[in-house]
Image (cartoon, rainbow over all chains, first blue to last red; front, side, top):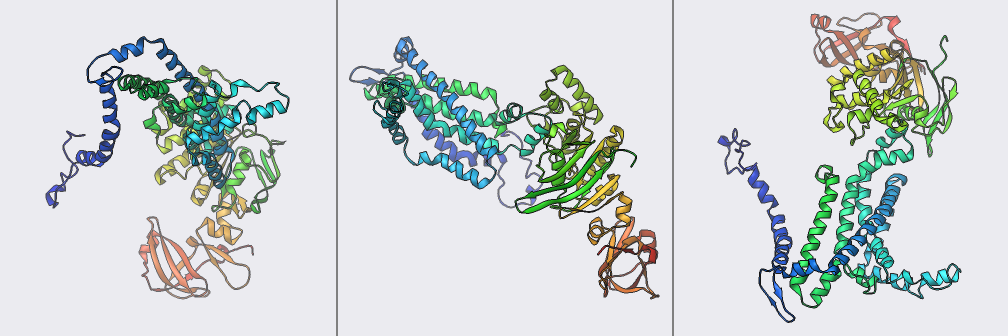
Length: 302
Length: 329
């Protein structure tokens, strides 16, 4: 575009007063504010992190350098692999759970609720938990799941178990439960949004062509909902992989993920090492997104 | 009747809450005919079609097809297929896969269903576009694909919901011819919902005019046009002047059966010219009369330019007694 001759005003230019601006130029100017914001608040910090990740550190000091010590230590430690594996495990399990729950909720809202008023009411109902902070929603699980919490009291009271169940709290279960609770809505919103844009006559056309309910779901609704599923998946996967506070609270500091690795380094003022871990995490997350994007062309679908 | 009725609607009723969309209609639609359901929007024609297709539940009454009651059968088991107003092609599937969709649902293997789909595409003259996505086709092409997809189920009745309304006027007339040709070739029934009387007159063997959930008149197009039974039909089908505010029986006279004279004669209505509209082969002269308000007279162009009238000119309207047609009260 930039090197194309400006033909728009070519014919009219002679009779026009005032300067004409080329399309390319006005395009750049229009996108400049957002570009500046992104450059200052996204690109620059990431560049800083990458630079610091090559710095050196001792117990009491940080010094600028260009060395691979941080990466060497990170990539040679078995702890790193365990923690990355745990992070990916959390991401996958949470993704599957939020996808199943989120798709079901969105499907129900989009196709089984007949009036738009009720769709909006029920949709807003889903967002009510977001009126409080993440931490409060997370912590509120603790009295429920604890050794003498509501869940265990109920289970023991109903005679389903003799002993209080230990794995309810401070376990992988509680971590994933909190993740699913916190992030399912991020799956519901984009899926619901794409489902609402599916032409209802397509569903009728499917029935008219002899498709059963299940066949309509797999042959029409799911393929057409794919962009929403992808956007929701990106939200959930990146949120879970970058999280550290949920893992810390819900596992009672007994489980680790990459976020906690970084947060521990920062607590110990080991910034270069924290940066190196952050860079590896960033690359991992970008790879996951790249893989997801291979399944669907988001630009086309938006 | 020689042939058994293909499709019979018996006291068919649809109500949404308190409002009645289709009010206990009785109708017989013979085999292998092109039938148009004609009426203004909200007259119940689309609801009727959707009930026939099985996409709308029937409030009361029955639909009988070849002697079997199909009122509560699912859409795919009634021997009908529907072509949707917006075509409803699956945007994620290629043209061939769209057409082969119903065969895929039946579990027909891929090679076989694609072969059959290509035959159908041939029928609608779309075989060159098999690999395209619906988005890459024009409106007329999408419609042909939708037609092929509906026909692959081998229906004995094809239901068309305002099939031509999304096309531009030129294409509309071309597709109209094509629909008629297909119907003749396939020999199955087409039931076509439209609000355009031109379309209905051009296509149908049988027109059913609906208004407010009831059937106002049904019959061959010539009969409906020549002898509208009610004032509603006369006004809706167009080309008629309604006369006679006195008495309770009104008269309808076709606009092209009225003549304009400059001299008064016995029984002529005095009028003054309000507007002249030149339409090529005919000229529509709008006149204002004291007795019957505004009327239109269609004059052939040769006759008109032989003796043109001017706006504001006083004229006299006459017609033959046999052209005046009594309407039901």
